Structures are given as C-alpha cells and as structure tokens.
Image (cartoon, rainbow, N blue to C red; front, side, top):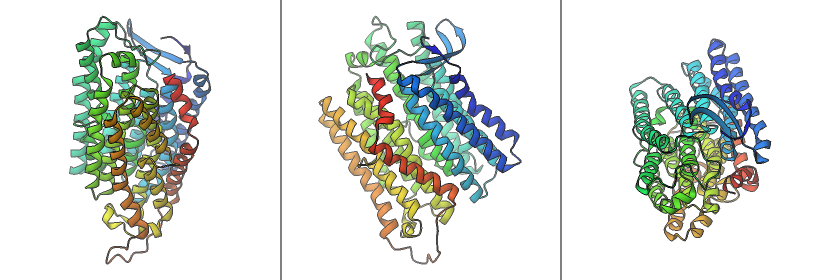
Length: 490
C-alpha cells in the first residue's frame, strides 16, 4: 500500500455508519431523525470533497484498517477513479435525504426509521467500495451493499416485495460467492496480493500466468459483479422495482448498480490492466458481449407501460455503456465509460425522483395514464425531459459527453459494429423516452380523469430540479469530473 496515509478515508466510510446509529437512536422523533440523516450526508460529502484537491494534485491517499495475511488487508484508497464515484454518491445522498422525507411522509409509509437506517448503511457499503484499496476490501463492501439493501427492497412487506427482495439477494449473493470468491482466491494464490495496481496499464497478474487462466478469471469477475446488470444476470433489477421510489433511485443511481459497474471497471483496469486485456484480445469481445445488453434491454423498455419498469430496463441498458467504453481500451472510450458513472447517476436519479413525485401527486404508475400531466406538473415533467435528453445523449446535457467519447472511442478502435450499436441504442432511447414527455405535455387526459393534479411537495420537487440542472451544468462544463477521468487514463 503506497501513498499518503490519511485518516479522512476512514472517517468518510464511518460517517454513514454513524448516521445510521444516530437515526436509530432518534427514530421516535421524525424531524430529529431526518436531521441526523442530513448531517451525516453533509459530513460524508464534506470529507470526500476535502480529498479532491490532493487527488487532483496527483497524490494517492491511503489508510490501512487491518492486515489479515501478508498481501491481504482491509484498506482504503482515494485516487482519481474512486473520487468520481464517491463524489457523485455522497452529494446525491444529501438530496435523497430531502426527497425521501417528502416521499415517505407524503404516502405515510411505515417503518421510516428502518428505511433511513438501511439507506445510510447502503451508503456505507457504497463509499467503502468507492474507496477500496484492494479486491478483498471491495468484495467485503460489495456484500455489505447487498445485505443492507435487502430490507429496502422488501420494505412493503407483502408477497410481491418479499419475492422481489428474495430474487434480488439470491442473484447478487450467489454470483458473488460462486464467481468472485474463487477468482479472488486464485488471484491471491498467483500474486500473493490483492492490492490494486497503481495505473491502468499493468494490472497485477504476473506475465507468467497463462492466457487461459487470466481469461477465466476475467470472465468470473465480469459476470460475478452482477450488480452491473449485464445480461443474463440482470433480472434482479426489474424485480427490485417493488421497492419505494427513493429506494429505486438509490438502486439505479447512487449505490447498487453503480457499485456493480464501478467494481467491474475497477477490476478490469486495476487488476487485469489494459495491456494484458489487449494482449489476450479481451477488449472488443467484452464490448460486443455487453452490446447485446445495451440493445436488448432498450427494446424491452419499449414494451413497458409501467414507468418504473421502463426506467429499470433503461438502467440495464445504460450501465453497459460504462463497461463498453472501458472495453474499447482506447483513451476516449475509457473516458466516456468512466464519466458515465457520474453522468448517468444525475440523470437517472432525476428520472426516478420524477416517477416518485408523479406517484405521490397523482397515484399514477403507468405511462398510458400520464397524458396531459405535464401541464399540471410542469416542473416535474420538465426535469424528466432534461434527464431523458441526457439518457438519449443529446447536447447540452451530460449524457452527450458520454456518447461523444464513446463514439470517438469506437472509431479509434476501428469497430463499425460498436458504432452501429451506439447509434441504434440512441434511437431506441428516443423511442422509449420521447413518447412519455410528448404525451405529458401535449396529450389529452384519460377519459374520466377530472382530478386537478398539482406538483408533489417541495421536498421532492426541489431535489429533482437540482439534479436536472446539474445534468445540464456538467453537460456544458464537463471538466469537473473529466479532470479526474483524464488523470485515470493518463
């Protein structure tokens, strides 16, 4: 573990854990409970943000918690890649605290204390993954996220939610234990260490390790981190939509799926390395493999009338952009894939915030029931439109930055097939997002719907407005996250 020892890493990981304890202690006083959630979220973001200047100066910050065996430790690291995920997740937690309060109180949901505790614990796991210094630490926090989000998915405690939560946990736990654990053990046996490499070129596997073994380990890691939503291990994600909308936002934007793709690309770049992947021709085949997910999930999204289900399959598709970009093994592609971790987070959390606001204000879940709602909920559907443009990849929203770099990366890699996939997926994005926005603003309300709808509570509308605005800002001024991404690539 080389770098500057900094206890702020440990404090950042412990902040949401302390927040969970504070929420539990103040559970009978809702206002105090939400204040504790907010303070822990602000503390976490402050700690993470305070690391950014040193990381941008080219320094790597580390903190070793304990060493179990030589080369096997629980350790933390702040480098350029970890900052992209940690900054986005910690900032969005602040907004989600406000949004959740409006949603849960608006619907008078039960078990709000348990909900907030598990929410904080999920962020504990996510930040632990973001700051993990080695594969062992990454795996530990990856499992923490799985366990702590189970009660959130099962929150409604009915037959549907229990079934969805069981599927969620079985998929994620079984793939991790069946694929990641054996791969991790073999990597340790081959190298004597699970510490990540210090750059994306070299990896940690000795040159003497044969190609078939490296390829097998690579496949285990690609499929084992099933939170990345790659088909065929994706169906847990739509099933988890039985959860309350703030949980869906957490799953799709802040914690769970981002933990999946972050873990996948962290291992691709800092365990296997771009040179070894190129030597074994693992790059483009991986891009082709996840291209199936990108296109197929988009086609399925077209068939979904339930808004959250459509957004869920959109997430399945969009996550694979991250992996595809890195798999191109070209600077532009890697930059496009990695920056999509943040770009997708802000846009997708906006979309789910909007879905929740629509449900609280109107109790409507299906797109076919939302005709004309845009005229009575202009802020919500305006934010939805902005986030949809980001998902499509249209300027000047953040998703355009992603698509541009991915297209350049595909051309640099000389792959017309990947170029065709990106164009096709963009057209499919338009096909399943544009009708929602068009019907909301220009459609006629369903026959018999004479209710005068209005915007959801401000506690929900303000966060979704902020995330939509930020999507535009980082589309016009992408340098904030791109400076970290370029540090990873260079």
